Structure formats: structure tokens, C-alpha cells
Length: 314
Image: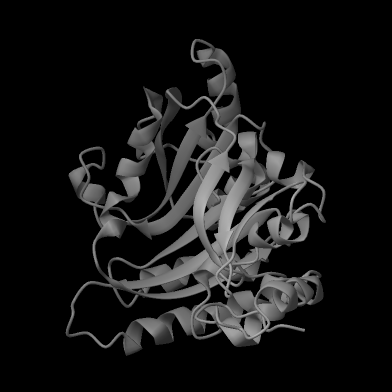
């Protein structure tokens, strides 16, 4: 999980204290930092390769009220460059997930801007609720990139952040390409903006997450997640809702854009792999694949759990 407070509290797996795992041979195993620690390492980033997890114990974090919302900016090369430069370097209290997309018909979007390609910056500020000055100081570099089309950031209950992505819970098709990296070249920034202007569907988008913060401070070998040194995560999404649509046009759109972005990639997010899973497995598990294969051989030597980005037993 790379969520709305990730730069403050780390990945979901960084907050996992213990899990109950049913292995391929029917054993129920308690795994944590002291018991079956090899399995505990593997399930934190290694995908669904090692068993069925029936129980999680997490370290909780305060999440009652936060400052959250969206800042919507025109999608220009200068705006996107500024965001890419700033988001991974912001203070830990600021987590952003941005969407290069057609402006939706939302109440906060002026009617004459609906459908315009914009950078919608989703914001969560986890600092002191009454320290609005600190919040605004953290947001100032984003707000300064261009005159915002909309700015809804305010004190809200944390679950409200998920309202902005509620549409994505409806059944739909998706062609996905994903990467971790440090930056985009200027030509690639131009390419993503032009691709969105020629999108195969009004629902297509490019999602960009600023990494860094607490993610990067966990030792690289502490879990099987292999991308702690990345500055950004980028995901290309071709989306369609028509059940009669076979998705070919949207897959072609995503693949065409991905070909232009691939040189900037040095990793892939295992949860978003599709037909490229086998080809990109070494990227998804960069530097940890052989260790994962050894753990797989111990807990699932017959590769029972294989309907995934599959790690084959060593």
C-alpha cells in the first residue's frame, strides 16, 4: 500500500507487526520479526506468492483529522516539471498523489474547465491541525506553479480523501503500465501531456506519486519492497467502462506511451503488473528476486500460489 500518508508513516508493509499465514501444505504460521522472519520479510513486498494471509496486526497511526483535498493546476510542461522536482523533496507531513487527467465534472471544477487536461494534485497534510501556516508553507511551491483552477485543501476527516477516487471502485477495464524512477526527461513530460490530449478514453489518466520521506528511511533489506530509493512512481492508466469495449484501443494507447517512458523506469509495482508480469518480474523485485525464490522453495515448493506475478521456487 502506497497511500495518502505514506511519506509520514511509510508503506502499509512498514506498519505490519505480525501476520497469520496458511501455507500450501495447510500449516497455520504466525510470522513476525522473531518467528519465521524469512517469511515475514517475503510477504512484505513479495506479492501473493507464499500463502493465504488470514490475519494482519498493524501498528496504528493517528488518522482522525488531516488537512486534505486537491489543488488543480493547468497541465503545462512547467507545472509538471515543478511538481516532479518538489513532491519527493517535500517535508514528511506532505504526501501527494497527482493525476494528469481530463478535469472531471466535479463541483469544485469551473464549468468552462471541465474536460481540460489538468494536473489534479491530491494532498494530505499530517502536521498539527492548528498549524495552518506550516501547511501553507509546505503547499506554497505547488500553489506557485500556476494559478490554481481549484483548491479544496482544508481540515477534513481522513476517510474523505478516498471520496476523490470513489469512481475507480466501479467495475471497469484498465490497461496499466507502471514504473518507479527518479525523474522524467523534458521530452517525456511533453509526451505524457500530448498523450493525454489524444487519450483513447476520457477516463484515461497518468498517476504520479511523490516518494521519499519515511519510505526511503527504512533499510533496503528490511522488506522485499525493492524501490525505496525511487523519487517517483508513475502509472499509465487506460480506462474504459463500456462492457462491449474489448479494450484494444486503450491498451494500444497505454503501450504507446509506455514505450516513450520506459527508459526512465528502473522498477515496477508488483500490484499493477498485467500481461507484462513475467517480463518485468526482475524489475518488480529488483535485487531481491533470488532471496524471494529461496523463501518460496521453503514455504511453497510446488508453486501452488502462482496466479500472480509469480516467484518460482528456487
